[in-house]
Image (cartoon, rainbow, N blue to C red; front, side, top):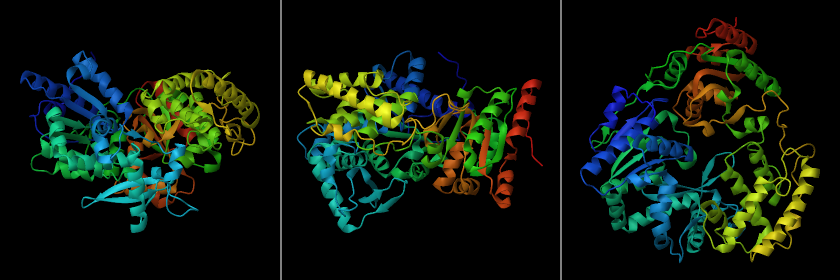
Length: 601
């Protein structure tokens, strides 16, 4: 068991009456530890009272859920499942308790519903609209206005456009036709779950009896459909508790704006309890966050004996390698290990210049196998590698069930599907006979090896299952859109001193605390940051800033205006160049006293 000393605010939440709570929390305030202990206390009281009800602890990411499960196990000495505590993502909760057991009734399908990801070949027959630019079901996003479903088209750049009446009607018809086959997309699943609870109030009451207490973490990410579902469970008898921060609402693609948490906190039947002490970051980062968001959080930590602070330096977009090397040099001088640091970007365009994490490489089957190879070499979550591999397999093996990707991810399906899943692991794990190393020359060694290995693998598939290779599979393993020179991984592993440095989007780091953070900005990102958290772009910048524990460097374009520089300084940032900051870092380490801000004249 790990040591935890609750603050007065945390104790008030943990020991609060068994009623609905709204916990508005600042960054780094110990939301996870507090939420787990609140759930454990609720479970203890239900046990004492002889209640047979379960407690649900929900969040929006698998990383958060894994952390909750580990902490609950350490706290109670047993896992949640054996203690009548369900710890899941919101998606998993909807799937497990609403869609999978009951969704067929709302969807009018003869089988257990399953999720489709959008890449399944059979979905091409569900496209609609302009034949030259058809809309796929995976592009649809759903909002609620006055209780009515509004349909939008989502674009790759993150924007959406509301469909007109004719396209909305066509979209709903296609969604219903897909549902009749037992399938739903991510967005449509929420629609069907809400339809089900509307049509069957008894189901909502049954769920409320089973889950008299539901706590949702990261509640600023609750979208209109999750909010409507929670409202129905609340009306049916569940006590709902929300923990979140309005200023960290960055999931507008789900139409989540933080409004649900804000309105929930103002309800007369909800007890509001704050968490205002930031226990993650040093004073300078907490001060900058307060000045950006107009908040009044307090700090807890004292600065460690190495360089700390909140800085900005200017950089040239055409010299990113030099910027990265300077960041690594600064980290080394300050005593930070490279695995203690990260470079965060607002979007995939900057990130793609640092790594291939979000780059689209290849076409057809190659696109999926190339992505699997790249993510494998970059030590990504193995489940993501398996998913990309499964998408590739879909393009070269015929007669696979529509639910193949879902079956592979959830270890379901008939004997043939389970055998095929087993055969996929060597594709991932053994580059010599499976998906070749991404460090090989893309159009020569890698592609040639992939074709040979897939041919041999398909022979084994045909021997051990009833599945057959697609007659044209070989044409789908093509060099089109592969890099014309060099390996799949644009920056060869080990080539640069910063090759091991973590580079990711702000969204990928949400919920984390990282000792040293560089936020690499473009003009629009920077303008939004200094403008505050009134819109999502500003909130994304706020999230980037508040990931830092000890050291934060804001990398800004060289052409940044004097007006913006003045605003940055007014919000707690100190200007420094890489050389000056590295020198200050070395001095801080040598003196073994907390680093102080170094300004450039």
